[in-house]
Amino acid sequence: MVTRLLGSVILLITMMPVWAVDQLSASVDKNPVLVGEYFTLTIEANGKVSGEIPDTSALSSQFVTSPISTSSRTSIINGSMSSTTSWQMQLLSRKAGEFTIPSFEVAGHQSRPIKLKVLAREQDGEAQQNIFIKAELKPDTLHVQQAALYTVKLYLGQDLLDGQLSAPQMQDAQIAQLGKQSEDYEIVNGRRYMVVTREYLVQPQKSGTYTLEPPIFNGQIREGYRRMAVSAMGDSIEVEVQHIPNDYSGTWLPSELVNLSEEWQPSDQTVVVGTPITRTLTLTALGVTKEQLPDIQVPDVDGFRTYPDETDRKQMTRDGRVISQLIASYALLPQTPGTYTLPEIKVPWFNTVINKVQYATLPSKTIEVKADPNQVSVAPAPVVSAPQQTTTQAEPQIVLQTADKTWLDWALMVSGYVLWLITLAIWFVTRHSTPRKPAAPEQTSKLPDEAEALKQLKQAANASDTAACYQALKALARAQGYAHLAAWRHQLSRELQNEIAKLQGALYSANQESVDLSLLYRLLATQHKQVKNAKKQTLEPLY
Image 1 (spheres, rainbow, N blue to C red):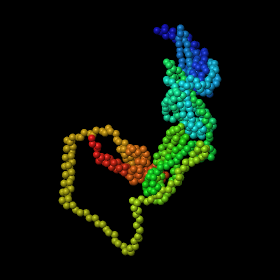
Image 2: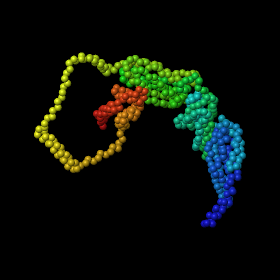
Image 3: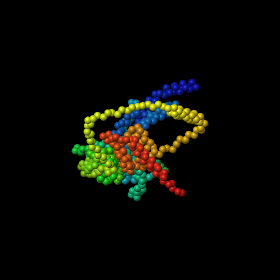
């Protein structure tokens, strides 16, 4: 055993010079290659290499490159040991022409450069009929930060085994895929294709002329009983990005169409003092993302208290366009009677069709506020000064006199104590003999959402936490089937509406509003109890 171990050690020592790198070579698996077709570059070193990787950074200026994978193998043939280390990476060219893959250096050895020829794709070739890509950008002329919809369609005319579709690329632009890809079938020139569709949102960040590079597909299809490698690439699109005008002021909003609308609840132009009004503003823009929509500033009006309610942002695609919406609700609470004019609201935006600044405007609105007929105003009583009295009256004196207790009083007191002692003794004797009732099983059923929201509201009211109370209100509204607090509030009583408006004022108003959280909880608990009792009184259906 010892002899064999010593022999192995001696053999390894004698073979050490073979492990040094004595040759470095580089090769490609295809030459020539097609535009948009991946090929494999292999760099191989004869000998053992530890912790050293060839520098391939120069390739990124001419090709699309993948990460490097490293592998090594060692073999012993007829007592002779050899070791090989190889590095592989995938390369792709987006342009036709002749290119030179430079030499690489590892452990002092250099490989030879490779002349590579990249051929343009034939539009009417057989491979192009089996698989091809169509891409479209709407609109193709953009302004800085304007959102465009880039639609990519991959047409597959044969059975696909596997494949990979890369993402489009454009310098100084943000590109994000919208949703998931869709699959459908189309008939093109009498041939049935499976069509894979992807949509991307393209937003340039700087002005200038750019090239939107299309996605590239590489995969394998079934050709009879064989697996056949295929690839496809769409056409590049030149994009002209225009700069932001120097005279533009406000939040930059480039769009083809912007609309600002409003909705009032109640819709009457005559309201009563203390009646909450919900004003919902909707800003719709074409060709921008929902994050680009500016917040709508509602001016304050004397005689009204304005509280911001809920804000929602939406985004969708329709007919090759990106549509975004901002929905903001405000609660208005009239304080004093009179006629008030709410000023107009203007949102600036840049019309990319006519290259001109425009405004989405809501006209001014006149509202008449009437006094509450149920509220009785009590005039203060006039103050009448009493004539001064010239004569002085003597102050009354209170005389305290202790009464002596009789023997009957003492007897009643003693009998009361005796009866109390007898009752205590009876309770002590019978307490141990009374059987205990079994403990009620714990309720495993979860509290209903509405009851849980009332419980949270009670806890928040006891802790005087206005923020937690407002969140509990929103949870209670959802439990009762209302998506927004404003719609749920209008079906409540006048008193509850006023208390909720006070709570919103305490949260959002600059002037701190005083709100009684305990009163708000009691009113909602009473309403919940009334609704619950009404449901119990309803007869069950007969079967």
